[in-house]
Image 1: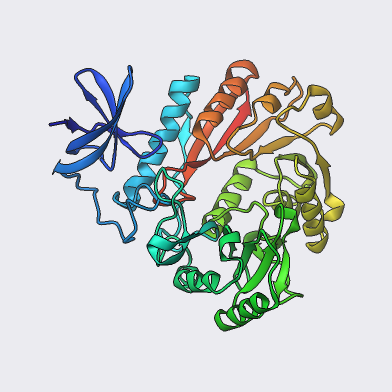
Image 2 (image 1 turned 180 degrees about the horizontal axis):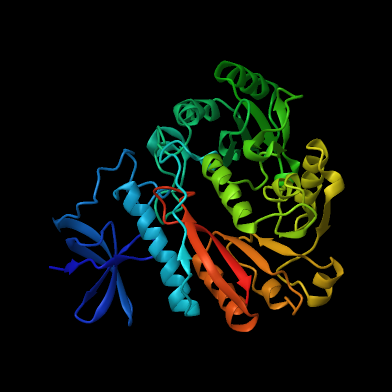
Length: 432
């Protein structure tokens, strides 16, 4: 019998134990628990396993709300009380700073939290016709599998979208291209929800009629995507406006295509933007760089506070959207945008964009190591770094502190994805 006492959680939300001197990562286990587990894999330095029985439960263990939890791969921490999830993510961030960079923030920010359920405004649902399951499945993948979970509801999707899942299964089953429609992308902003149907073959006239009827019945806007993300276009209503989201603290509204990257949790994003700009201590007339600026999530609020902003982003399409948003919000005169690959940026490119008083960095999971390596002696005195990966944040922090002369002043997490192991964070670095 394999029995283990769980000491902590790893960055994937698995329980960590030591059994006979070897590290074991156990799915479904929580710190403080004693569990019996099934060994899944054995490696020279560690084993992996899955809980079979809880011999001594944690006081922080709760009953998962979703009936599909444990099969669906969308969530990994519903069995842990939400406050404990937040505390563990904060520990993951602090451990990454210490183990990767030998750094500790001078102060820790209080965590940013928001709704624990119904928060996910963006989602990519897989569609598959499975005869053995009785027809079409629409949902997330099963845990560590290419199979689609047999879902009829989802507790982290907004309630109106969750309620659509059974109807979407019926809808796709009525189409002539049911086996050539692999994906439905969801984007919920201001106004009706948008569903983007990825179609690998043209629709028939009968298909189009079915889709129009569905859109009108349930109150959604339908887009069709025959190729890459940029081929997505409104189908019904044909003249439907793009979705948008607001940052009311800064009187900013950002329009986006439903296939664009935007934060999935609008409530937490609003607080995160406010915190990042508070850390930045924006003063009118300053020049501030917004690196990996995307649609302008931070760029436009910075400009609204009176800064001159230089936004840099690798996607020309996103920069085009950012320029449109700046114009629509009356901020175009204060913002200069550049298209550049910040993963391969050189010191010469960085110099070409001018001198900055301050900088905001908001990269994808890969981080921004080449960018921070390019910072020279006249680099910004203050850098706010928003991260979705503690490991690459810690790696880049090591460069900023140990090579570039910054201090890690403060850092904290934002629980952007409750019930998952995803850790979003923000950190402040200052010179001297």
